[in-house]
Image (tube, rainbow, N blue to C red; front, top):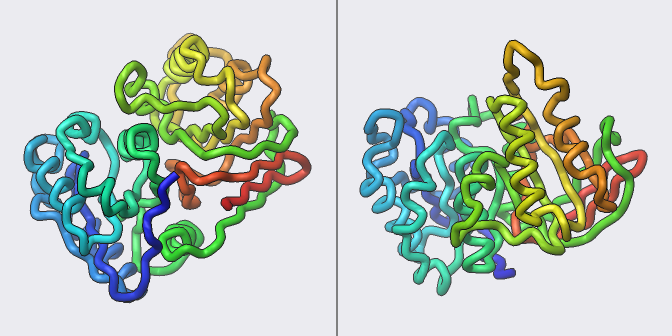
Length: 299
């Protein structure tokens, strides 16, 4: 995997809106936060545009992202928020300049489109981490600190108590995945993730429980679980049910879908649509140990 250069003081970073619309008030705390680390923040020309729920038209969002991809002085591109929209522009983005001069692509949720596409087509690491809409102030916290640590190349290692339903074991492999709904939408496309020999991370928000089951069955039938080295399940937040209950929560659905496989599984990893959203380097080789503690170390 290609590793973009780590940031240093004085570097330029961009904030753009490839999906849902956002306001200056929502972005301003992130601008101030990054400036504390002596980073120069450049905003996309259409970052505050609005076309219904999108941050401007497909053409405008694509033009903004393309400009930041091509600008060699920009060392990282941070998606302002998720929602929906990146899938509509991914096939119109030209990654020629990015291939020659890779840079960090940062975000989660809808940004999974970019993580999956770049990992599959360009073999380059990206950063699954909090976005400006999640900052809610300029103060430091664990979520923001792990984002900055990853961008500046500090070693990342996480540990937390073993959650219920987890399956013990140890594995090493490249980290892939992201938002389950987005991964499901990429099936059969040029951005479809290759999970063979990988450690898969999954998270989701505001889905019906039967949707989670259907998506896991699709992943299973497509062979995406057959050759995994390990599975990390992050936040399964704000799940919905029908008047006649599905009968299992999201973690139980996932545990049932992978019960026949031998790889280690951990649940409730603090990443995704959660107050604590730890940074994960997608495409980076990691070591996962599930025992009395869950330990995740990045090489």
